[in-house]
Image (cartoon, rainbow, N blue to C red):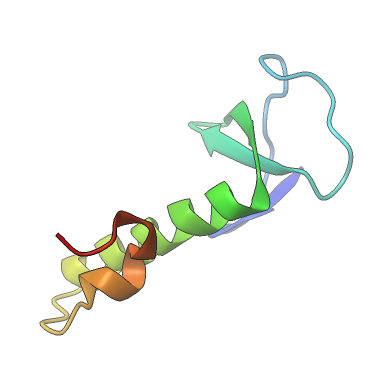
Length: 73
């Protein structure tokens, strides 16, 4: 069982093997695909937050706040 953005769900661990509780995972379509660092998990969650804000019609999405690792061009 994994806890993520949308609550608890089962994750097939066949691709990455058993992991200790608290490990950050990239889970896609019910399969754990990759073990993540906490920093990578935070970046992915921030990007998903930005996408959610855009989809919901937020006109004031601060891209720099959601993607601080990209820096300003």
